[in-house]
Image 1 (tube, rainbow, N blue to C red):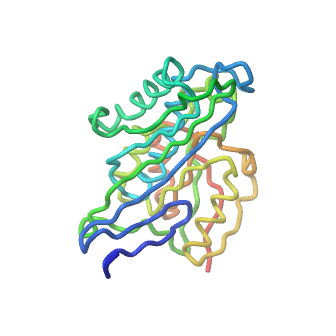
Image 2 (tube, rainbow, N blue to C red):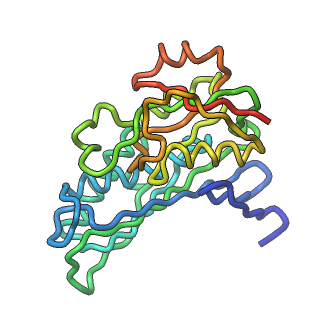
Image 3 (tube, one colour):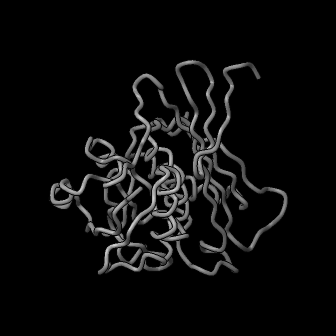
Length: 252
């Protein structure tokens, strides 16, 4: 593999140094039982399933500062017509990034056996140019702020205007006063807050009156946590499209 092929894990991401200047960042997501098939538990369109599956995987690498370059779908459904409809949803998620979906998307479907439950996996691969990349970092004294609120299942579609998406995340990534961005998934805000603290060798103190349920699943990354200096909170509140809530203060 050569001396430069360094592979490491960072939270849920896999990082691979491919040469002295570039690094691959890999994330994945999966879902099952969500769709229009006979035994799906949550009934929704395959387009929605593809859209949110792609969004979750993409948001993980975007939040880390990588630029998406490839999206792999492994679909446990037939191509005609559930698979093709899921792929249409994936293409919709990519539109916010202005990428050529014909080149970026690849994958596989189940053509040997009929299936009665929708299942899919998504893998996103991004690239970091090391010389231009600044590692996301949280320091003691910063505060953890939730942007948006956790939603899962039918709540996601019923409150779509309140849900984090790729375009909103890209706007946040441009704000230089944000130290770190961490999408909130099925384990909830509190879990991701602990992860942010752990990977920066910090502890934290929770705010006394938090209006959000910090243990609730965030579903398909419907909200996220950012770390900022406390004096930037009002600026973030002013510039954010979604609601912001102080969650904790990071300490040594």
